[in-house]
Image (cartoon, rainbow, N blue to C red):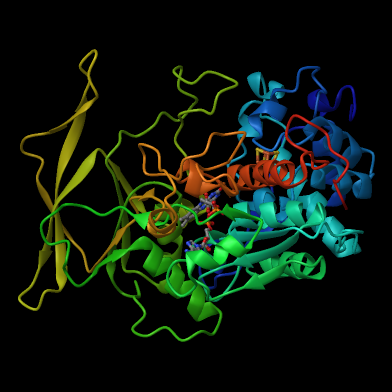
Length: 487
Ligand SMILES: Cc1cc2nc3c(=O)[nH]c(=O)nc-3n(C[C@H](O)[C@H](O)[C@H](O)COP(=O)(O)OP(=O)(O)OC[C@H]3O[C@@H](n4cnc5c(N)ncnc54)[C@H](O)[C@@H]3O)c2cc1C
Ligand code: SF4
């Protein structure tokens, strides 16, 4: 335990952010880390409560009270070893995880919870600075080959675990860079891309082969996958949702992912023809999730005239709703750093028409306010509120409506069964598709989710692949400690 009275003595402190006026001038990360003295105090707030609900809150089963304790004791290297024993990439989760662990922290019942995510970030950043994170190639090779399709967090975690087990791993990625949504979905101001590169360098030095610009099923035959002893499909859930609304084809209605990807590519110095820009435009972002928030932050950085956000659901309560009591993930209003940078947020609003001029250019959005009518035994019904029609001037509408599921090319070509939500079907815990040597993990299996879940599924799937290939596995699982927790 950090300090018996730590939680009574010290208040929660979070990282601070650079002022809005400064940070919107560029695309860099803008958090200001806590001092070492402060973060050790934060570690001491952990009560070591006996039944750490944070363990089950974290999909990776991170050993949170233990690393909190180590940070408080100044045992940073030990803390890094422990953190990496359950999480391949704490530098991603430490920046981007919504931290369900903190929502189930026992201290959170009476006080602000322990700042677990920030402690995680400080541990891994310290470890990189000190040079403690080194490649650990396996001592022996099994002679088995594994193909991983997709290099998002699920594919990367699966690849690193399988390589640790001694298998020869090739990762195929259709983009020109490795990283999945970490690379081209999530903007630089949330995750600078050198953070991905330094980890990929470690994976390469451990012996993993990466092949980019390889689109399996398109420019690389799925037949070729049959040469591998096992395959792990981690292609994500990339089918974008659209709106069946008149005028959707107007010039100026753009999918959020196109908008975000283009900006990241430009920052890389890559050529982007006719980049969609929010500069001097009235921007409306349709969709209130993480992707919508990232579009708001990017639009403000590009110098939008105004940024407005529409969400069809009701505004969540400012505090944890009684329908989601502790230790569950709370239904609660989320205000991101991008929201703080400037946006007008509207809830319970539906787009009825994208208005365009004679040249097909978007000029406005027509909306109506809505209500959700609850009828016992039926699904909630969307009802328009009479007399609430409104027209909003708009030059750029960004569709941030989520994803409907994975693309079906690989499933169609290989005969892989999908579930009723169009995800690649494999039981959680087994991760094996209807084709015995083909496994699947991450968003491709569970639908659009979170980085922490992708890493967790990648790790667990790797263990199942190892068992399939070798009859047993020393790789750890969330519930089973293994020997191969290298670092
Ligand atoms: C804009 C945005 C912001 C987000 N912000 C957050 C956040 O702040 N926190 C958080 O926890 N989660 C966030 N998420 C969700 C998170 O990024 C995903 O849940 C996570 O990346 C899923 O990981 P994955 O490895 O399963 O798939 P992905 O990251 O989608 O990676 C799949 C990879 O497979 C590749 N691929 C697909 N098909 C093929 C093929 N046939 N051949 C070769 N390669 C292929 C794709 O190009 C891609 O690189 C965000 C998502 C978006 C879109
Ligand atoms: S990965 Fe996410 S849920 Fe797990 S300890 Fe870190 S912040 Fe918490």
